[in-house]
Length: 232
Length: 339
Ligand SMILES: [Zn+2]
Image (cartoon, rainbow over all chains, first blue to last red):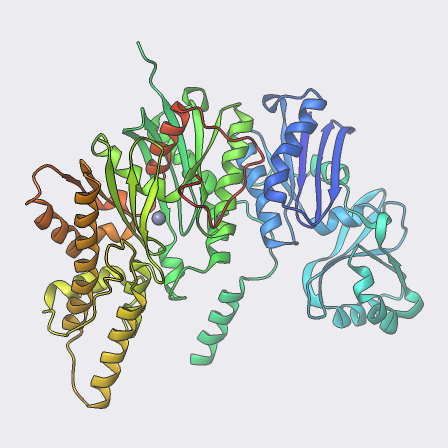
């Protein structure tokens, strides 16, 4: 069972190959550079090195968002097209879940963070139960202060994870004090092999209708809906 | 015996998700276009983020329809061609990455096509090219005169300095409160009206093949505004007819002048505005008198964005051995002369 996993939802560009539960290859860069140009060459290089031909793939896994709209779209387009044309299943995994998965030894709640500007974040609430990552609260776009006030009621320590955590460190600590544990930097990178492992047992998605989980509507659509409401 | 060449084309540069298979650069085997126009109407124009989202929803469906229509598999194809620019960047990236994935999955050559070259090559699905030829490209984003001396070579001898003709149409349509997209509505109204209003023609300096439509657009807006202040009623049909006449007069006169100067054998009409009935009629009438220049106007279905034109252009690049590697990107401002 050979699985190819693709993650382009943040600056990190990740590609990995799994054979069953075993990681046979992983490629990751963490650069603010063009994903559209680099993903297919990265896939090609990794598969060449691992001596796996496209026709030998059994499943495609993709990080489906949230994240950069364009970034996620690139990964999803490639994943969808590969799966469709190779006639193999496609599975989508939350990009936040991939980040949360990097804290697999952490015993309490995990809140993976992608900055969403203007004091807002993309996040969800996860925890490991019997070695399996479980979503406790679904992925959402929320004002960080609202999110922290909500988590405070849990009365358990929460791990805030991600490269963007430092942008919100002050606000988190102000509300949650000792209840919050913050991890950024190296310890907080989404790993493409974690994505592949999460996707391995994920049921196949309906291919044609598969789209990124943007969480947010396009700005023009939000404005249009507001206008419709105002006119009613 | 020469082997037949089958190219799969993909086009997602604006608001149509399209795929097609073309045989030997000239014969349509399958041609599928999924338009998003209904979705963008409520916004009064194409919203890039929404266009990109629709492309992801449609891409594999359109590809599947295309292969089914052609009754073919990837084993029957010789290469994958895709629009690499110009266009909306987010929209381009969907087609480009899908094409790269296909080329990789089936180990097929990858070809990047300039969108406007595609519009020009839509004509080759109707008639074989004879060089030198001149193409008048008119669309929402482009107004240019392109000279071709051989396959795959494009020289822009004139282009718009401000608004594209299609843009001017949309803006004038908006001032007349016509729904988006405005071009066809102006064309329809113009056919019912008389060009009674005196509007400027931007000929620019002597000998220039460039165009300018922003002055004309402002003149229309001013005329409507002044009439309103004087409580004078202008028939929208007459406004449309006067505006359209000014656009068409400049377009046809410059095309004819360039066709004569460069002694071309063919003149091709290309781009979305090529669907304009007024423009088609004016060109047909004037070129009827020029016996040694052949005028080619594609059917309406090949004037708007489609992938048949991309696969047709891709076939020429395939024959010329011009391939891309998997690092190909989308280029929103791609220049046709450098493509
Ligand atoms: Zn076009």
